[in-house]
Length: 153
Image 1 (tube, helix red, strand yellow):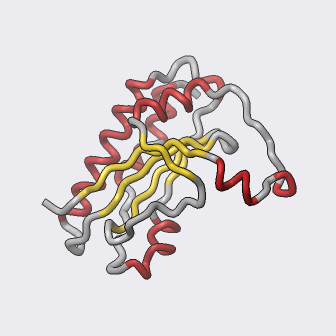
Image 2 (tube, rainbow, N blue to C red; image 1 turned 120 degrees about the vertical axis):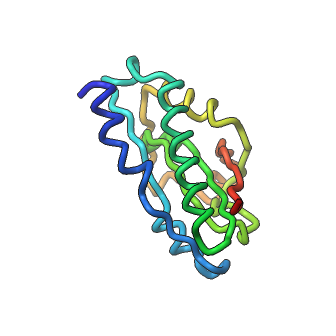
Image 3 (cartoon, rainbow, N blue to C red; image 1 turned 90 degrees about the horizontal axis):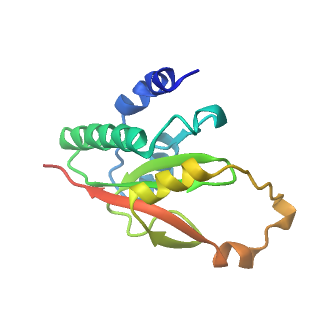
């Protein structure tokens, strides 16, 4: 697979329909229906640039904004992070009625470029078993996250 084929395979993510809940009670459905994961094959990490990924995410965010504009009038929070254990960039949308993102760790807002660069430089997946994870480790962990609020226009 080369870079062109990789991004061709991702085109359907750009136009995937989103689920817009009507209240905070729809959070689980929004999380389940609106999460996407991008895994960059190791052989493409030298070929794919941060500019390539920025172009992809600009298209995704633009499409999500368009869907919100014709949706139920609810704004949504688009958020993106790098899951180093899974070696994936993940992104999701939840209603802006939710005041906090659904993570149990500390969050640090960063630019989308910082998350992309972290994902491209990640060469090693650290395997941690569930038995090794303790509650205090979760509370001390800091996750870098990019978020933006998309409002109907």
